[in-house]
Amino acid sequence: MKIEEVRKKAKKLGITSGKMKKAELIHAIQKAEGNTPCFGRSNNGQCPYISCCFIKDCLKIQL
Image 1 (cartoon, rainbow, N blue to C red):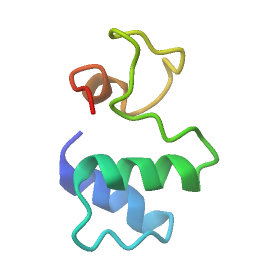
Image 2: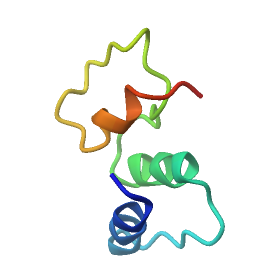
Image 3: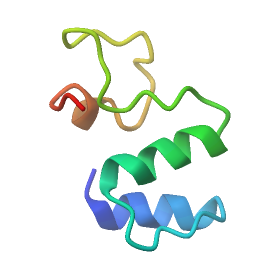
Image 4: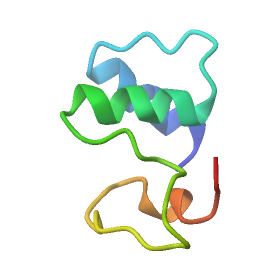
């Protein structure tokens, strides 16, 4: 998901993105939605949240 899409999603949730990095912004979105802020913290490419809209990007990185 491109940063512009992430910012748009954040704005809909009332989150001001400011100068947040992509991962920080996604964590804020996850928290606002009542989810675990786990983006980028997958366990060896494994994630139980297969319906997460960030999963493709998440499994590519490690924070």
